[in-house]
Each structure stands twice: as structure tokens, then as C-alpha cells.
Image 1 (cartoon, rainbow, N blue to C red):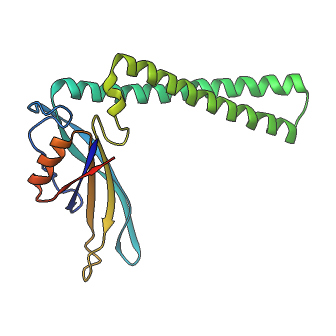
Image 2: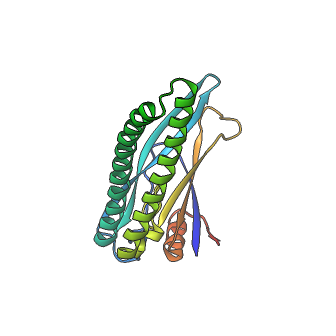
Image 3: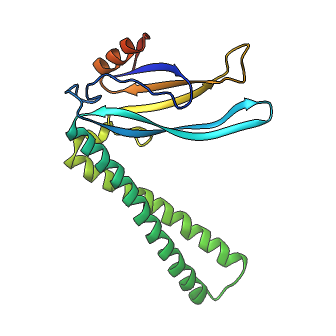
Length: 196
């Protein structure tokens, strides 16, 4: 199960959290900064802003280390697979142009097809690596790339009636730990909604 907690705030407001690990409810000893991105927030008729601000989510030391491990895995995997794909694309381009002895549209089509196959292979290798890492660290199943271990943020910009030039953020956190969601909701005088 999981629960949603929605908080109204202004951009760059400090978001208060209970002093418990959001994943296991042990006392929080550290925090992990999660970037929340705001896109195309209208401040007046002609101006839109896009920015990101950090939200510090509380964790115990063990779960913070796991969150950082999963973040590093994602970054290393994307960089490595991208570099391999670029090298293979260059090799295939040279190989196809020499073997097929064609230029122009046919070579372009063959190259596009090889890039699509390389992309699909890269996604498959990435998912296989994630499954292998998940065998060693079962908590990876609860990791969200847009958030962290056990928490996923989503954001909506709200324009109050009468003051549309002062937008507010409706920040919704989805917590895997229902008890932590209830503590968070009580801290902000709102409700935790259970989701399936």
C-alpha cells in the first residue's frame, strides 16, 4: 500500500517532515535532498518560470546510503550505456557504408534502424542490471527515480482566485510507508489518502 499527502506551499518554502525515516520509521539521522521541478509557472500574462528546489527528506543512515547507491547506479548506467551506444553507432555507420557500398537515403535508413536497435538493447541491459541489483538490495523495488527510497513527489501549480500573480504549489508526496504518511499529514493539518 501507499498513501498520498498533499501540501500547499509557496516556491522555495521549507517543507517540514517528521523526524523519522520515511521508509522504516526509525529515528532520522540524516536527510537526502530531492529536487522538485516546477515547469512553466505563470507569474503574469507574459512571464513563465521553470526552476527546481530541494526538499530534504529524512532517512536513517542505512536507507540514505541505499538511496544514494540507487541514484549512483542510475547515473553510471545512463552514462555507460550512452557511451557504448555512441561508439557502436559510429562503428556500425562505418561498417554499413563499406559493406553495403551505398550512400544517401538507404544508408540513412540502415543507420536509423541500427540506432533504434541499439536503444532497445540499452533499455534491456539497463532493466537487466536493475533486476540484478534488486536481488542484492530488495528495497530497490520501492525506489523512485523522481524522488527517493519510499517517496515520490508530484507537483501542480495552483493559481488562487483573485491573486493569479501569486501562484502556490500543490506538492503531493506518495509515501510507501502509510504510518509515515499519517505523521506527515498530521504535521501539516491535512489527510493522508490511501492509494492502491
